Length: 129
Image (cartoon, rainbow, N blue to C red; front, side, top):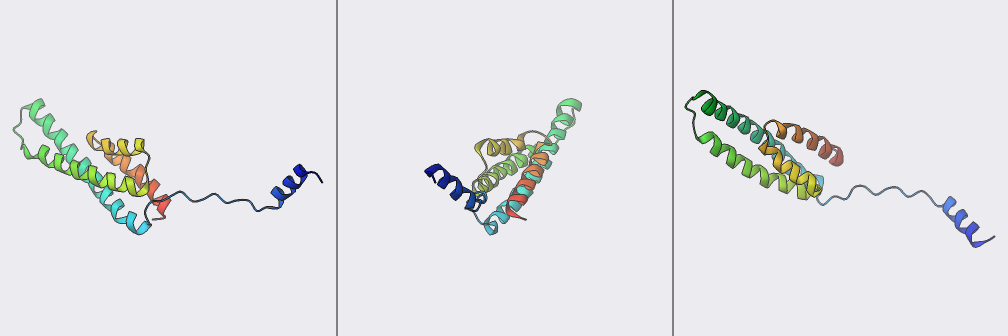
């Protein structure tokens, strides 16, 4: 037998290697609370952004006197959203593009709801929630 035949025979008899699971930087027990915080803040950010849009339309479109604190609340909720999203992104090892896209989703009306849904499906599948 030649050397190439020996290699082919050895490869044929060796068991197929199973692909390694996706690398995780945190256990599901540590991801679950970060995931819950992210989902709550994504919805809160989206809701306050919609209220802010309604306030701006009412104020500048119809001349209605509106409370100024809606923008302040949205700003603080968005700030907390940035922190919890970054925390989750580090724990589940999102790529930089996905992380930045998720962070910016809180600035476009309705987008945070869709991005949260997509991210929730991905994290649930990866961590078997």
